[in-house]
Length: 354
Ligand SMILES: C=CC1=C(C)c2cc3[nH]c(cc4nc(cc5[nH]c(cc1n2)c(C)c5CCC(=O)O)C(CCC(=O)O)=C4C)c(C)c3C=C
Ligand SMILES: [Fe+2]
Ligand SMILES: [Fe+2]
Image (cartoon, rainbow, N blue to C red; front, side, top):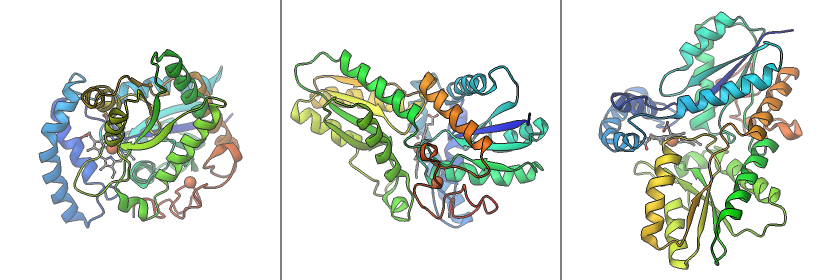
């Protein structure tokens, strides 16, 4: 049996207060986030990260000073590895974070030591964005080359309608609906991390794939009659971002006297954007705006259907002779987007962060 290295990608988060500013610097110095020439971007990243650090430190203080993203990702990796190996030890699963440790360079050295026959690249983002999966895959290819990894690699580009992800999200939403005791019907806010509008206008498929995920969850809810909206949170900086914003939707629900159920649709584990922004800041905004009830659905995290679905997708790419984007129908990039890094794999730099 062949040895298969699975590299999972996520954003990364600072593990202590002093890490907040360098973490933010790494984020804003990424050409996928700020598309300026090197020296100018470096300077801007220095300025923005210094200015943003106290605000972000306050956010992470609510979580004990650092982000829980790495331990939560590790728990997912353990669950995934157990599902994949199922009595064998063919699969080794490695974590590569984009902006804080463990970064791609370390993961690439570990993968090289594992000496795999093939490498499967799995972004922990169901929807593809140049700013997340694209940026991580681009960095991976550079570091894999530097580490001398010669085994062929293929990636799971995106899985916005993956049945396990959709079923897990729908089950959590159903549970929240059952638990909400209020005479007025709730509004469901499917909340995703936002993006600057100009990134979407350049062809980034993220917003389109967020909408695909929401449509799939609504369909999976079957007969339940939902009043739902897709909205976008976590805006930073002066640019115009895609909307409607989650905070504007919360205020509207307050004016209309509607209870709210908030469903994270682009985050698959808990971190600052769910535990602080959704659970503390937006809950307070809801109270202040007169929203009669506010329930936040938890992320799919280690849910069996989600991890099982991911494992199924990974086995499918391991057995396939080409990379697969949205697995359920085995098609090439559903975005039909030239920047999709999955094919042809010989040209991994194609478009991803440019
Ligand atoms: C779907 C996932 C994400 C997209 C798309 C995304 C784009 C994006 N993010 C920023 C700026 C920041 N993001 C920050 C935190 C953060 N972002 C994501 C995911 C996506 N980002 C996650 C999972 C996290 C949490 C990390 C953690 O807590 O561990 C932050 C830092 C926190 C803060 O200062 O508020 C910034 C800054 C931009 C500019 C962007 C697209 C251009
Ligand atoms: Fe972000
Ligand atoms: Fe794709």
